[in-house]
Every structure is written in C-alpha cells, then in structure tokens.
Image (cartoon, rainbow, N blue to C red):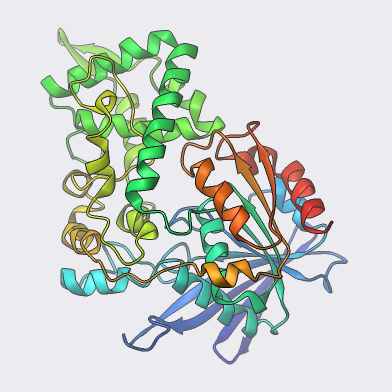
Length: 429
C-alpha cells in the first residue's frame, strides 16, 4: 500500500484483481457559502483497470439520499462495463460511508444545530464537494453516472457546474424541476397501489398473511431484536421492496412462514422478526429518513408531505378493507419508533418545517446545456414518477432518453452492462 498527500487530498493505493484502487479523502467546507463554520471529510474510492491509467474519469453518484457508494466484492455489471472506458470514482456523498458520518452518534448538538447541519447534505452541497474533488484530482472534466437520487444530484450538477462535466448518464433519476414533495407523493402512492395489486396477484396467499400479521401486531406486543415494539404501521413500510425487481420476490419470501406457537400462544417467529428488523431499521442509513423529503424542498416547507398525502388515498388507511404496503415514504412517527432516529426527531421536525431551503435546479442553465446527457427513464418506476422525468428530459437541451417499461427502479443493478451500452451510444450520437 502506498500513501500520497497532496494539499487537502490524501490518497492511499493498493491492488485488487487487476485494478489499482486509490482511496481518496478530501477535506471540504461544511457550508460552501461560508456562513456556517467547520469542515467535513469526503471519501471516494477510485478503480483503475490495468492498461487504462490514462483513461478519463467517471464519477458515480449513488442513489439514496443517505446511502454510501457501492462496495463491490467483485468487479462486475455496470462497473465492469464502465471500467472498459473510464477510471471510475465511487463517491461517498457527504455524511455516508467513510465520509464524515452524520448520524445519532455524531449529531449530538441541540436540535436547531442538528437541523442546520442537515440543510447542508442536499444535492447542492454534494455537487460542490464533487467539484472540489475533481479539481484536487487534477482538474480534468469527468463523466458522471447517477442512479436514482444520484441522477437528482447530476441534474443539480448540470445546473451549478456544467463546466466540470464531459458526459452525463442517468438511470432512474431525472427529478421534476419544480415539483413539490406533495406532487411527487401523489404519483408515488398511485404507483405503489399498482405494485401492491401486482404483488398480491402474483402471490394471492400473501394478502391474507400480511393482513394477519398486521392484525396480530395491533393486538400483541412483538419486539424486534433492537428492543422496540414492532407496530403494524411500521410493518407496512416493508412495501418499499415492491419498487425493485430484487425486492419484489424477496418480500414474498419474508412472508412465507411468519407465525409460530409458543406455550399455546400465537407469536411471530424470531427469524421473521430478525428479517423484518433488518429491513426496517434506519441505523445503516439514517440520513435517508432525515433528508428524504427535503430533497424536494425548494423554497417551501415539506411539512411531512408523505403523511399528509397518504390521507388522500383511502386504500392506504390502516383500517382499509384490503391490506396495502406503503412504499418509499418517510413518516414522522418513524422518529418515535426507530431507535436510530429517536435522538434526531426534533431536528427532523425542524427540517420538515423549513421553508427557506434554496432551489436545486436552474431551468435557464439547463435550457442552454451543451453537455451530452443520456438518461434511462422507466415508465413503471415506483419512486421517480415517469411524467416528471419526461418533462425534465425535454427541459435539458440536448438530453436523450431511453424510455422503457422493461425495468423497475433497480435496472442498473439488474442489467447494468446493457444499460450503459445504451446510454453511452445515446450520448455520443
């Protein structure tokens, strides 16, 4: 292993299976505008295939918000395809992975201070970090690939710093430019209802099983391994899995045998509770819950939009006649029930009430865009509404789209090599 220090950038390097791997740590301002003091560290892991040392860089923006970049145990799929043409930089967006963590252990100040910090983990700050990293790595323009929220970040990048980009590729991640959280959730609830119908049509037995579990949780106290009671409403949030191909069938397997009998009493199996707890806990990625709605906030408070808009959809009421899972929605009561979130609940309420979060996209700049942009847009995406993505694609000058109903939200994970072939070809026509 070798170590190199170049100003604020520290790099450690090693070899992995025919690749040089460079681990970069960059110190960046907490607040790029300078109004809030302090610094953070941002981490990125760069893969360079043998013989591709002089290749241009491609930086990957992970989905989320609040998720770290991939940690591939083998180089395959989309990463293998990208390494044929690029040095690939896997960026841990601020607050995630090996970047300075932002969680209940680090956010120990008063709620107002916590909320002030959380204002600075949105796409605008992430893009400013990326630009500093690009310059620290030599300053050449780089290509960028964004999955899901990573595509939101790249739309901000095209708005704020297009001079740093040579090509942009987006999968399942073109946001509405001026849509509110309410607008988004009205469409995602409707799409989640359709995915519920598809799920229970494929697995009819699971409807009665899920209803029985929910009824049981209303009547009997069942505790997760982390000590908190599992509520029926929290159980319903397992439906986020319905938005991906990989999660759809996994949800069925989770429901296949949830009950047992203990001393004549019906109880949930321990292995079921372990599996559910693993799926529902925000401990690995608390930022997702904390800032999920704020990624849609541009000059107006979100005011817990998912909770409010849910009331417009009778099929998602707790007393609805047919059981339905919810989807990629975050609710204020989760900050009362999830131990990873409880210490941050007051900060979450302050962030939800913040009407001063600035715009993330510049429609005028996007209308004059000259960076080649290619985006995969999924008609049936449960998390990123197709209508908004299509409108944004039209608003970005020169953007080209691959519109398909072949994929759910995890298309890049499931068929990444093919998707990159399509997007590379689209961008370079």
